[in-house]
Length: 129
Image (cartoon, rainbow, N blue to C red):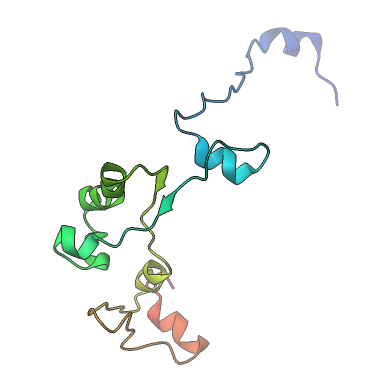
């Protein structure tokens, strides 16, 4: 099925052209990860565990405060000449999103007081089913 000349004349829409954004000022980490070219030095990636000491609450509690998440993430950038910083949450937030209690009491690691015992419990536990 073709387009008539009348229809084509009425369709004056223009197509926007996508242009890539400018590369970041410090793209060392990206260039090293891509591996397409040698880089001037090995980039530094730091996992920083300061949330309890600096934020005054557990990691999981801190996630409810965006300003504290930002602060915890950028602290290493202020302290060290690093190329990237992330807030690594591991798999804990998935369990919490499913309604499974997760605790981090300190000194013993991560605890799940009432783990699922089988797949049949998913429907009962998940708040969206």
